[in-house]
Length: 173
Image 1: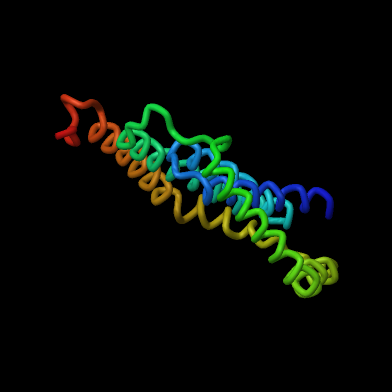
Image 2: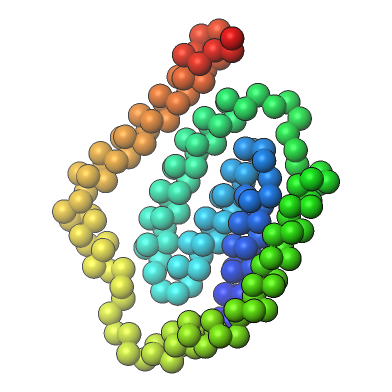
């Protein structure tokens, strides 16, 4: 379990570095998807699978709209990729910053977080996300359908705004 959690946290840090070091929206959106996937995997490994699934769906819906909007507005035929020199320098700096932070804060943070979580595991008799599922589908079912409709409407509005150079609302001067 500790090995799997370490791999997932490493993937989360890799996704965060990918977002922070790249100026192109294409690769930044891919880094956001990777980091949100690993972040939700951490939640699922810690015993909250429904919260992880709900957050992942919300993140993917929001990032789909943001990615569609930013990639349509950024008409860069040759975006900077992770192999370019400037992006590699930023990524190396961020990795160095993470390693220094882990070496400085790592031992004390483990004693206060993971050690405490694994020591009180026997007292957890009620899952923390079961009540949320019942409330969401019982009372909030119509609100969830309304939110899905609003996300779909937002997607169509963004696609209509960025539809083309001659027909969309946002045109090049």
